[in-house]
Length: 202
Image 1: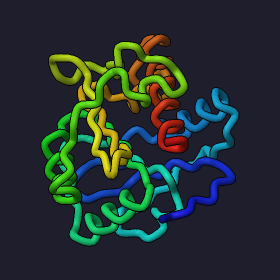
Image 2: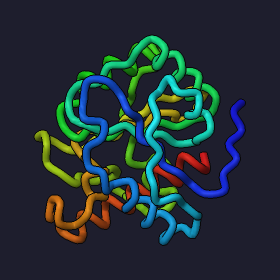
Image 3: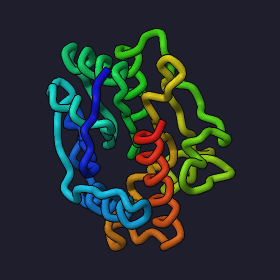
Image 4: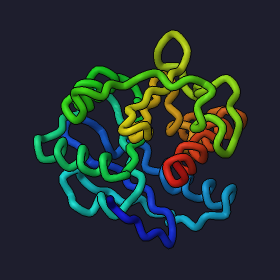
């Protein structure tokens, strides 16, 4: 079992092959500011960038993937991610548009026997800090239909949370990037707090 020594929360952005892993550079600093302000838990305002084959991911309880379209993981990245998640780590993936088929394919390589399943609105991730009685909010309209959260469970623990047709992290950007209404940005930050808080307390 990995033991995480946490003095302040740092958010790790995963660098991957195939897509724009680096997009929206203000989202992590903004989310960390809001998380500390709302929970009182100390955070670092600088994002940490690592690849999945880097052994340093085991120092962090929470890692984050976002971007558009393609993502390709090497055999070493797949092996390391599998070990990280089995040993207590948490992965949050936010589809920024066009990533769905690619992230599903790669996660199937990581866990062939543990499929992504829909997360019902009653799940603790939607209620652990802020209350979302209807489940996952939609921040940006990328596809028709409702937003949906999916998870991969390992021994009863949700180790992967994947948000589709929601784009929570876009709402963490500086206000002038997308000119989102204040209420949408607030929903995005609240859901972000829930995701991080859940990963630290589950």
